[in-house]
Length: 340
Ligand code: 3HC
Image (cartoon, rainbow, N blue to C red; front, side, top):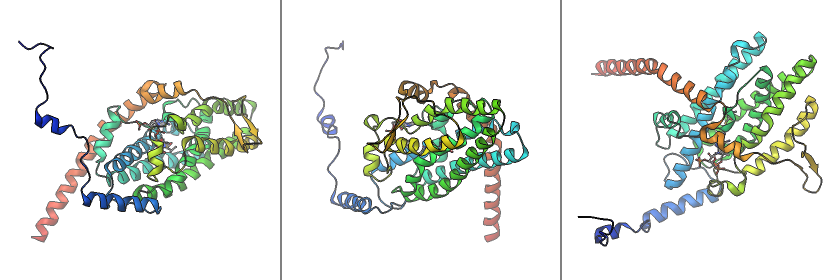
């Protein structure tokens, strides 16, 4: 009878499997050396080029998470299209939400060039395995939230995304150029909407201040964990995917936003926020990382609602995808018959 004490040595074949990474062949070493030279020269890696598996995986992870953030990010604002306060605001908001959908499509396409299909990426999102930005798990309670998302959330997104236009992977870098142009319009429309509200009634001003209070800290956390706790940063920077660290981007965002808040006439909800002459930057208070991680791990106020809305949209759209595929199949058959 076999018991836990039944113990024999690994077979020789099994022992052979233990060597983890076989030494690179001379061909692999040459490919790696070429890749390293491209990265060191700040060149671009293209889909046809050889790349280390880790580089490919990191890009698929980051680009697909980014794409998911764009399409989940349509939900909190889409919620306000039918309640926009004027025809002008409704038209702007429809265009903005549609742009975010477009960003998702460019990004899924960029990730597909790395050999992962859109269906695989969406399956990851729908099963809750794939991440998307923490910021989209908070509710939009009133119209001022829509303005604040434009000003602060899109403002933070641009700060993070401008350096991605110089990412070492060509398709991602090129997609980001257009994304950033559109994001800059999103940021301005949000700021302008808030400027108008701040010239309105005391109630409208209070709504803006309340929305700023609720979103400020979430936007600071959006840049990701502190550099010391960011497992992917060092390698991402080495590969030229990430150009500026989480903390440096966060600091740039704070420094850029303080004067904008002054012009708008709102206060940022941080008693520790003050200019530091020595550092030539603003100091700011402690971010609640426990809340951030709880949200990233599925326990934010709207995680369940966001995911179930995406899954429902996917299921409801099955007939459209089926019809498009059937149409494409028929067209192909027809053109093959004509060619025969
Ligand atoms: N929300 C959710 N997860 C986050 C996060 C956030 N705000 N910030 C970091 N994380 C996750 C990372 O994905 C990583 O998890 P993983 O290893 O399982 O993938 C973990 O926390 C540790 O973080 P790191 O700093 O080590 O990870 P990265 O080096 O990948 O840096 C990042 C994180 C800065 C978000 C980087 O991935 C990035 O620049 N991504 C591209 C931009 C992007 O995705 N932006 C999201 C917002 S897009 C948007 O807001 C749409 C616009 O219309 C407003």
